[in-house]
Image (cartoon, rainbow, N blue to C red):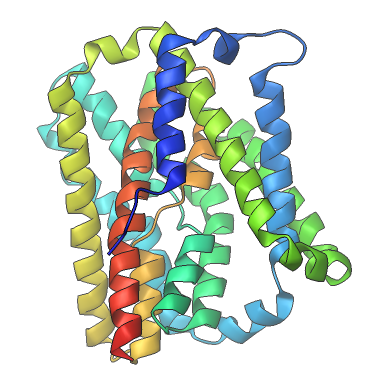
Length: 319
C-alpha cells in the first residue's frame, strides 16, 4: 500500500492555497511574469523529453500493433465517449462547465513516466509501454484540440489552427530537436533523470498556481459548491474504474499475454497531468475558468498514482 501521500500532490494543494490567499503574482503582467516563465518551462520539459526518448526502444515497441491500437483507442475514444454519454444530463451553465472540465480530462493523452514505471514494477511489456506512452502525447497534439473543438466552439473561444500551431511549437518541435540530439546527450540525461523529474513538477506547479490565481480573482469558484467538487471526485474515480475494467475485458478478448495486458491496462487508463496543464494553458489561456479545467485531471492524477501503484506492486509480487 501507499505509505504516505505523494509530495507532489501536497505541492498541488499548496499551490491552490497560495493562489487563494496570494493571487497577485499569478496575474501579474509585467515584463518578467509567470506566463513567460511557464512558456519557457514547457519548451524545456518537452525538449528534455525528446532527449530521453531512445529511437531503439521506440523501434522495439513498434511491431505490437494490437496493443497500440487498444491503448490509443481507449485513451482517445473510450474515455471521451463515456463522458459524452452524460452530456444530456447537464442542465445549468455550471453543470455544463463542470462537464466540459471532465471532458477535457477524457480527451487528454496518456501519461509517460509513471505509465512506464508502473509497467516495469508489475513486470509487464516495457517496450510496448514506452512506445504507447510516448506516441500518445504526440497524437494528443491534434486529437485533444479536435475533441475540445466539438464543444468549445459554441463559446466562440476556439481557433483550431492557431491552437495546433501553438502546441506544435511548444511540444512537437522541442521533442523533435531533443530526439535528434539524443545520441549526443541521451546518456547524460539518463544520469540526471531525477533532477529532470523535479523540474517537470516545478513547471506544473507554477502553471497550476497561475491558473488558479486567475480563476480565484475572477470569482469562478464562488459559483461552484463543495457538493459539485465532491461529485467531480466521485465521477473521476468511477471513470477510472470503468475504463480499467473495459480495457481488462478487451485484453482478455484479444488473448493478450500477461505482459501486454499489463501494458494495456496501465497505459490505456492513465491521463497526463503534464499535458493537461500545458494544453489548458494553450486552449483556455483567455478563459477566467482555466483553473476549473485542471481540477478533474489533478484529482485523477492522485487517484491513478495511488490505485495503479498498489495494483502494480501486487502484480509484481505475483510473479
